[in-house]
Length: 110
Length: 114
Image 1 (cartoon, each protein chain N blue to C red):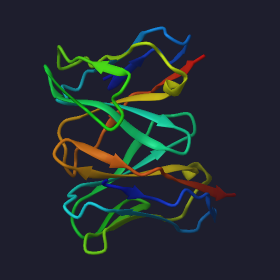
Image 2 (cartoon, rainbow over the protein chains, first blue to last red; image 1 turned 45 degrees about the vertical axis):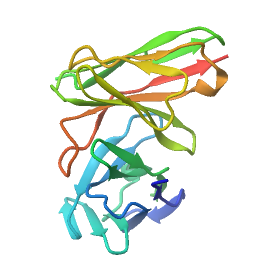
Image 3 (cartoon, one colour; image 1 turned 60 degrees about the vertical axis):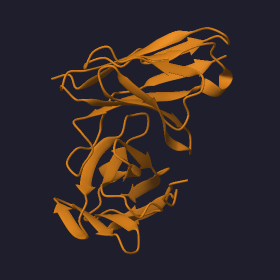
């Protein structure tokens, strides 16, 4: 059974701090990795994608991928209360579909 | 550009009733997916389609059926609704799988079976 694991949280960080969200996956041949943000009662929204080892930065967000250790992480710099949401990790599985983690709930405290 | 449109947004069904959840996208995406999301359980794939006329089962297909007669539409049919089908249902689409082709999700349908 291919799995994607995330700590459910909540992860609480003060406003302005760096939030670090982690995800591990079991399928060694996975090639594509995504982070989605989901506000309560809303649908997931794609915020980052990565497929090469290393870091990928987009504004306040940085995705980090380490295929040897089978983990992917998301860093949110200068966290804002508006970043409070559940963050879902998704990993490409096979040719056509992704496996989602259960998500980490982030709370940014003003 | 509407993206992915799901209807209805909310529905209450009685046990044994049937219904169709509608999903339409206007982005000319080949890949479409149906997920259900239960509290604390993440997104589970029900069915997916890689193009018109082609569908396949996901992780939790029992109790559901799909069809894909056009690129735009991917309806999900619930037959003989059961309380276990109470969930939030999301339709999603993508151009193809790959690093720059994540999903675009619809706004969801919240279904309660009583």
